[in-house]
Image (cartoon, rainbow, N blue to C red; front, side, top):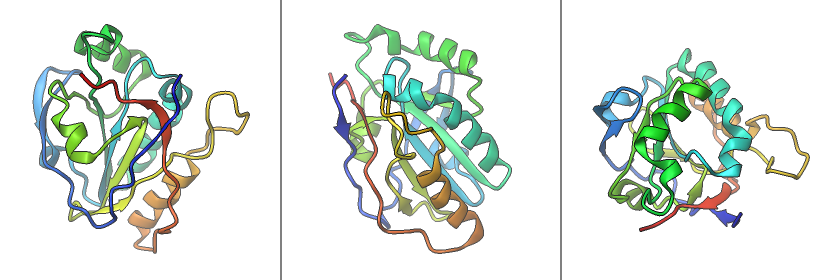
Length: 184
């Protein structure tokens, strides 16, 4: 597995808009339809990446915890499905069901959304405030497959709590790390 760091989009950047098919219900959904009252977390993930598999349970827990507090989570898969068929929309639907994803799991077939966000790896996290301005772009926590650090979601949870509680969010943000997005 190739370790790729996320690109650090400048804080304050407006969230690029999109409309993508949600593989859970096969309906077209936009960023504005899915954004939360207090904030919106856009996550680039995929089915097969060991880094994502390592944190899947925490992503579900985090989404459930913060949805009640007004932050909606959105997952997007942008991988090339010709060379990585395990990341195709039919498999995404099954994967979302098996993992109990409480968030939409959108398919970025053209990869234009990943490029607009400058996403580089899976998982890659972008947290936006109510004005859809970036307040956090970084890692979930320090855990990686095989490093024996427990998965807690601490870094992202701290940022999300800051958003909910209107407290400062640290600008010292460590990049996420995972498998590179599989570009066409």
